[in-house]
Image 1 (cartoon, rainbow, N blue to C red):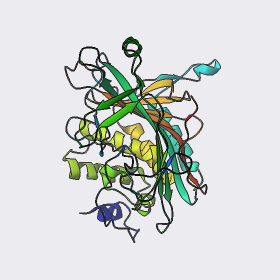
Image 2: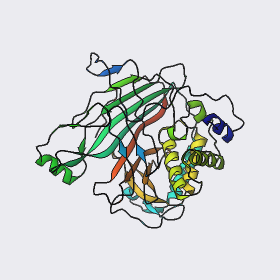
Image 3: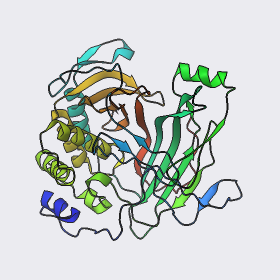
Image 4: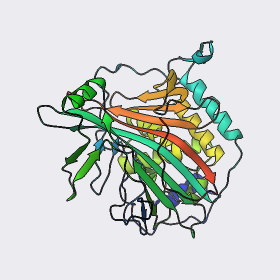
Length: 388
């Protein structure tokens, strides 16, 4: 059964699915390697040689995998961080956190409360339209070890990624990217970096013929014309925009659609701990930056609210300093955290952290902060540096 048939099964009253005539777009996190400078010193690439830098949530095998190609570092997410809390996960709805602490009152609130409130707001949201589905994110991942074998230290890589997905398939879609420069992972790593003379650039070997050059300085922006129509939810079948719009908008039907894909593609039985973790990750991806209709988003939030092991973290901050309600799910091998804007139904960001068992290296982490996710008529432009 192909992806068109599976989506049609979720909503049998719908028809006319777009079918992909290409394979998977090149793995996430990729920037076009070949380009010519324009008069501003930035790059505008005429032909896309790589995919937009969208993280691919894959929990196959040992854990969540964020992959990259064309000389961009690949980061593998495995098990829970050392020193992290383990043990039996709480029941569905999770443990209560504290809300509104920043304004004087502290109100216990469970993850279920947070997610169901977001579902209600999502369902009430008006349908949006525009020339482009515009997403701008701040992405952080690593850590990457640099320096010498004896005096190495760990750094985090940061980038701004931006996309303009045309609502009309006949129009051009665009992808923008800008490296923000790497920074020390911890205070101890900053001390080691300074002790090494505060170097600003490192050249590392990769699995590709090209070297990976990391720098503490922000890179120049790139703007790339996409040569293929946008695709979403890569692990669930690379859906077209039309297929996203026609996803099941009833909670039970959407859950069956996602878990059937998990079982078919990954051999994981619905209702198992592994399936629940995958379900949480995939629906989080949908809610993060996919142009799903309001009722589909509401159904996704309600599914998340019913997954066992979800707990509230109370009020937390994202990488840009914005406050939201934290919600976390862990199966003791991978932990995924969401930050929900309490005044809207939108996610401010996500963060995943993990390490292999018995590892001495720091926990691997991958975080995405959503700066913009909306339908817009505004034209594409080179990514700008976010305010810090």
